[in-house]
Image (cartoon, rainbow, N blue to C red; front, side):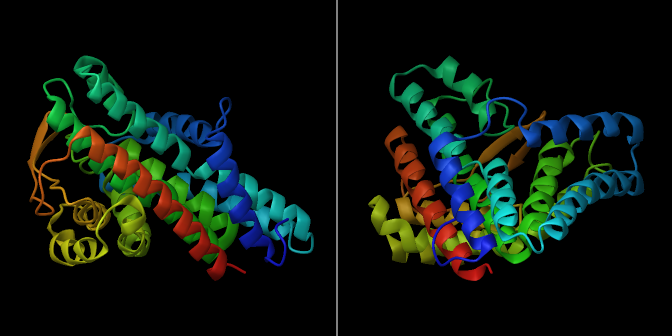
Length: 310
């Protein structure tokens, strides 16, 4: 394990390095397996009911946290085993390399003017309806997704790994996966997905704000502006419908001197969101800058998590 680090800290560093070098496991991804099992349970439990949705979210999350607790307990006196399992858990719950790759591919398609392909590709980053989006709107959607998912897929897992070890890593990924599956304000999930969405909001309250701070700190390394990132975050971070997504999106907007927010469509429902930032609308070159900033924030996050973990 990395020298002079505790077992959890060493596992976080090693798992982060594995994600950076190799990305997601190509076959049998544990998160995909969890998602498939959750989808089967949803078919059994679904009803237009908040209590049924809470039971669904509780059962799914309990299984993930329980596995983490079992692994943590079994390796209490086996530091190398704990390090190894923490590294594996970190690797499978992080999504930094995949996020950066999708952002870079979207930038390439948009720079080449391949709008139909970019519309199809956007689904790899978010659930926004892309059928009628033009190049400018696709660029904005991708940039917002890079910012939001920098927190969700990198900063938050590392935070919870540092705070609670393997139960934190697996439990957070369970919350986040369930939110992506059922946390929509659609007729089907408005009630059933309420508990999953609220749990994910609570789990991201601290990490999203840490992500915004790290964005401001890293902005100069991505040819951005730290003061603007800080100012726009403090001014606009609370204007987003989500208590968390707007934090990092606003910080990215300020850092890159661009403007995010506007009208979005999800599953046939249209949302008009406040504008974040005071610059111009993002262009493909800004999407590439957002990818670079995302990578830098991830690196800063693993350094912070290592310092905080035991």
